[in-house]
Image (cartoon, one colour):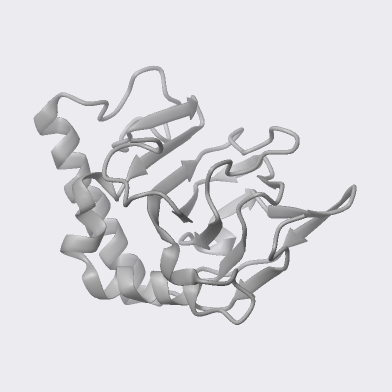
Length: 202
């Protein structure tokens, strides 16, 4: 069993200014990809996502952009990163010795209609803490509920824009299939290895 297995909902962790800063950061990361010849857009993605920069495509309806690449988020948005990091390590139910936890990844996930994180028993293996922040307006998409599990029973978390879910990374979790619109979220993971500045593993 994980040392800390609670699921904490953090209402309005990010405000509109924070989210606008995230979108600007994503635009700059897209420019980095364009300059280095990485995947920028298209590539078989659905029409909704074809205009978005991405480092990885999980499906034609689900992509992610690495905001931690070359420590971009920490360097260019230090106050925002500090806010996110503090929310994770200063929560009263986090594991002991949070000073050992370092950034593994900060990813902007975009889900179009038909997209989701549906794999049964999905976990963020190798990480210790995961924070998922909804940065889309809740009425801007259908479906797409963030789901954790209590035994075999799903627990859907009703989130507003700026709300976050914090949990131990070995907890199973999913994102229900999006039925309309665009769902975007920021996912931050901490682990006990060195700060990561590339993909999810380097």
